[in-house]
Image (cartoon, rainbow, N blue to C red):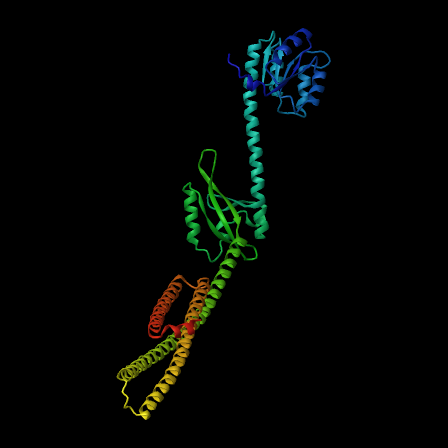
Length: 453
C-alpha cells in the first residue's frame, strides 16, 4: 500500500473509543499520520469535543457500542448542525440495523474490529482525496464568487438564451439604464440597440457567437429615458452540460464619459491648432514685412557704399591730376634753377614765385580736403560695416524666433536669404578693403599718419 503522508497530514480526526487500551494504542499510531488527533472515551465526551473543535475536525472514527452515549447517537446529534464531517464506524457487528443507520447518517465507511490499520488508512486516504477535491472546489467557487461580485460592481452582465432573449441582467446595468429587471427579462437583446447603430452589427455579433466564437467591440445602447450609453462589449457563448450552446453571456463596460472626454480633447486640439495656424500666418506676414524692410535697408546701404566709392574715385583722380601738375611745376623750377639765367627779369621771377606760392597753397588745401575725404570715407566705411553686422545679427535673431513658429520649409528659405546677404556683405567688405588699399597707395605717409592717428 502506498500512502501519501503529505495528504493525510492535511486533515485532523476525532477518535472515540471506550476501550482504554485500544484507544491509547490506535491514537498513538494515528498521531504519526495526521496533523491532529482528538480522543474521547464515549459518545457524550466525543460530542463535546467536536462542538469545541468543529472547524478543525475533518473526520470522526468512532466505536458504536459505548457507555453513556453510543456512537450512533453521537453522530445523530452532530448531524443536526454539521452535515459534511466524515464518519467511519469501528464495530464488531454487521447487522442490518447498523447498516441502515449508517446510510442515514452518511457514514463514509466502517472498520470491523479488530481494526486493520492498513485498511483503515486506505479508507481515510480515499476520504482525504475527496475532501481535498471538495476544498479545492469550494476555494474556486469562493474565488468565482468574488470575481462575480467585482464584475457586478463595475461591469454590466447580461445573459440571453439561444434566441437572444434576455434571461438575466445585473443590478449595475439596471442602475445605468434605469430599467427594472422585470422590464428586461424576456425581451430581445436587440431591443436595447440605439437607432443610429446598424442592425448588421448585431446580426454579425450573434452569428459569430453562435458559431462558438467570442465577439468584441463597442455598442451603443439606449436607456429607459432614450439617452445613449457607449459600451465596451464582450459576448461569449454559454454551454449546457453536454457542451451545446444554450445562450450567451455579455460583459459590458460603460465608456460613455471616456468617449466624451476624448471628443472634448479632440475639439480642444483642433481649436488650438486653428489658433496656432492663424497666429503663425499673422507672424509670417509680419516677419515678411520685417524681412522686406531689412532687405530695403541693405539695398540702401549698398547704394550709399557705391556713392562713397564713386566720391573716392573722383577725389583720387583729382589727386593724381594735382600730383602730375606739381611734378611738372617742380620740373620747371628745377630747370630754371639749373639754367641760372641771369637775364631773367625780376618780374618773371616774382611771377614764378607767386605761382609757386599759389601752388603750395592749393596743395595744402588739396591735402586738407583729401584728409577730410579719406577720414569721412573711412568713417562711412566703418558705419556701413557696423550697420551690416547689426542687420545680419538682427536677421539671425529674427530667424531664431521664426523657428519656433514656422515650418521647416520657411526656415530654410529665410536661412538661404541670410546666407545670401552674408555673402553680399562679405563681397562689399572686400570691395571696401580694396578701396582702402588704393587710398593707401595714393596718399602719402604724412597724410595717412594724420588720418589714422
